[in-house]
Image 1 (tube, rainbow, N blue to C red):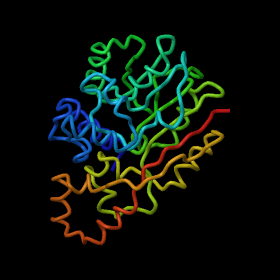
Image 2 (cartoon, rainbow, N blue to C red):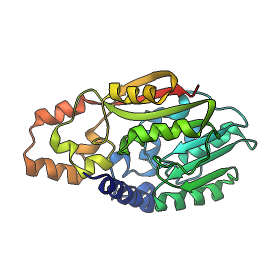
Image 3 (spheres, helix red, strand yellow):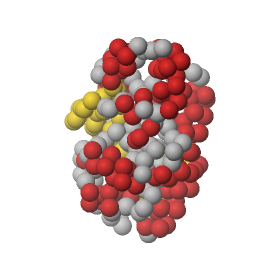
Length: 277
């Protein structure tokens, strides 16, 4: 798929999630997106958020997305400026805002207008005056050089076609001594071609994932130090195969169950940390 086609697919799917909110039935990745409020809560608990964190944000901010809790990797500090890549409806931004306090600032960047609208409504509803949402792509961040203390992101960089450029942008905007804390999906081995070329699997955060070794090499080659994977868990890709269009595709293409089983043991969720010297 071409880069612009990928971006259009992602915008379309996440736009539907934003419009449908927590009860959306037209979404990107099966149960992890098409969730009721209860499912969003259960899913978020399962990937590392506490009940207190979930209950502390405005209704509608938690859409049951993501693959981990980037804020659990490291504690943000009062007065810091935090940047969230792919901020969605604002869930992680609002949690970060609670940690940095009124003297700090949180900036969310997202390329989906429907998500930005929802996030800004949530910020107003919750009284988060020190949280700002900007329209932009994370390969071209609308953020000044050397202005950010911490970058966070949750299951978004796998959606970006140019991951090298993305990490260069993260490096550019961070202050010296600034760090990133990212949750993302990586692969143990290559995906089957039919899944790799699936638009639905791409929007569901699977087809755009790369091998863990390559992912870490990109980060180190960008210039980051103290790079470490702090947590790694098998990701339940049955969310993808439960999605109707994926199931239809599997049936039409007559994919063997061996391919499905191999894919289920291939995709991992990691939490990774790094520092700009």
